[in-house]
Image (cartoon, rainbow, N blue to C red; front, side, top):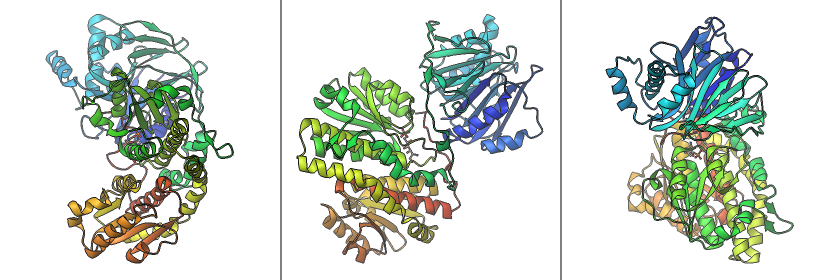
Length: 614
Ligand code: M6R
């Protein structure tokens, strides 16, 4: 994780860097720091524990002048979040400053060698080892910074995106990447660096996405120079990037998470645009049109993802198996990558990721590719690493998601998976025309029905007050609602720090029901559908143990409504589309409980939006 920003040009670098860090704070917010070279050639490094705002307070009345600088916002991996471990890290001579996103796996071996040569370290980080190594290589071989970075990185095992400054050469920033993203913005006699394009787009829409294993020398007044680790010259591919800056603001909402929850009806419209055509009764998904043979003849689909995206994958499995009769496996990417999977060119791997940067998902893709599988990406962040490493895919088009708790990305992913399942079924003729049209029509109505659910915000906010002091929560559901139970529990734990578990409702009696007593809130997703009667029995079992039931039911429900302590009524839809509605009250419940508890909803402790370390 961690966010990197850099600037070289004729503006004051500090405001550009601070603004950029704020845009990247979703990547980590344990500590922040900045390094600038001022007009006198002095290297100033300021860093502090905490958020970017803490850094701003820290530098008040300090010299932040200079037109070249690098900056960092950290999600701690090696060493606790304190100012010593904060980036930038400087070399022993204090000539070099470096910011890093990733993990240097062999840092201990390199550190031992440098210690033996007399190097001293001020932090516990792998990053400080890297800056010292670069300096050691530079001094012992009399090299330019560019060359020294190249040689030093040949000794490094791990993942990195780095930006390095040398105070002896204040017209140059050297950057490099392997498995962690890095973007260079090309302006008019100025350059920008970012972990993604968000710190850059305000100034230029011309960007170069550095490729894995590439090192770039960014020199003021010169064209970009890019080489790979073997010193082979690479041609920079300058691309145009589209970005709506308004979407990076809160737009009047107290938190990004709440804004993103309320954006969902519009997001689903954007996600369906051009893909779902009710008049012609067709779905159009370019990836399916372009790769029909590969997809239709797949022996099976294997979904790889993490966290919320994995929950979406569980729903995708049901949709694809039910609509297309193609077997689907769903794997945690982190488990898949080390599982020696039985997979070959007959398989299609679907990688789902909001950020498109999740290290485990990227590694799962590389493994699947090496075995010959065809890779389909479902991502949100345009131009991120996963879409660039997959053969085809579909963006979910829900716009930037800033809140660490994923909300609109989940419903966007489920929507794309629904469209994918329909597109495949359309080609395979595995659904009756009647059912196909019914799903299509109903999918088209989801945004309006989502709006109805969002009207319940006040009711849910009142309900949340009752549970502010709960220590545990159980979420249960069956069929399509089981992944929703997992997602509801994940939302609650990550932003309110209340322990919560999601279970398939019928599994309760195999152990977890022992936890149920009068103190235990149990959220049941109990909408009408084929498993409704079964869920009624499961609710009865909870009731008999005095559990306190909050039920998400279909409007007009007569049975569970009478058994539950609290009900949240949502509009009726098809069972297979239920998750697109039932997830919303659970997002709101988690949100309001966290707000009542005074938690930092958008930046919960220990988490980051983009998990670029394994
Ligand atoms: O960007 P990705 O979808 O690959 O991220 C996967 C998970 O890290 C992410 O969904 C995480 O679980 C969220 N914080 C959940 O709200």
